[in-house]
Amino acid sequence: MKVAKINNTQMIKRVLLVTLSALALSTAAVNAKSVTDEVIAKQRAALEKNTHGKGFGPQSPRDIEQFQGTNLRRFAMAPDPSELNLCNIHFHKNAEHKGGEYTTYAGNGDGQGYNTGYVYNGQLSAQQLTPVTNKVCAAKGDSLQVGDTLEVHFVYSSAQVKPGPTLGACLADTTMNPALRVEGQVIVLANDDEAIDFDDLADVERINGYYQAPNVPTNMGESIEYLGSTTGPSYNQEGSPLQVSWSIRPKVAVVDINSVGEWCDDNEFNEDHAHAVRNLVQNPKLLSPIMQ
Image: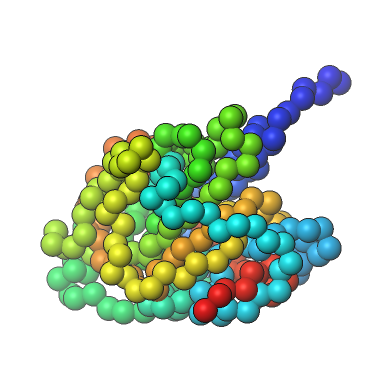
């Protein structure tokens, strides 16, 4: 069988496609019965076995209030977002990270990243919790509901790229190893037209030659920065090979659920549903130290 030659960029894109194929599974699994602790323990054991001694770099997501990590792989922190191109925006149902105002565990979920992760610790008003009758971001399964927690990822790249669908938009054939940065913001959905409008939050503008998301909140607490990887449940038992600089804020922003639905109906990233989450990475050998 003839084997075609694959360049590094194509290989990276294939890795991203593996991630995205897992993220695109039907969210109908959300309603499935939660798996036992034993299932999650076996996934963690498989991750340990499949990464031990193989040189994987630090992984994500993590508890941002736990600063310890012993992973020996090092790479430079990506530049400030103002010096990078915003290339993709997407979100996950429940927070992948743990910390700040989102430390309440949602449960083990279905073992494939649905109905797990972490949720907002606080409470919305009774008025904000008024149910909506329309379906919100339900292209792959169940509709989002008021009170749901999402972790929004604003992905940036040092490559000369434009905003577009999937993480493949962050790569370019002319840049074999772009610096990747994710600005993470956890939000909670409220039926409140005075809350943050998601379309404004996800607004993209060209500023000083770079594509930017200028309306990401800056008043959500001091950002926690660390070296990590791509996320998603396809890496529950395998290590992610991609290097990502992370910045995530500890406070949760209240966002109007109706504006999220409108964004899902029409955005340049072709995002129409909430993605699943990866198990929290706890193995110190797979975590970078966070500098205090």
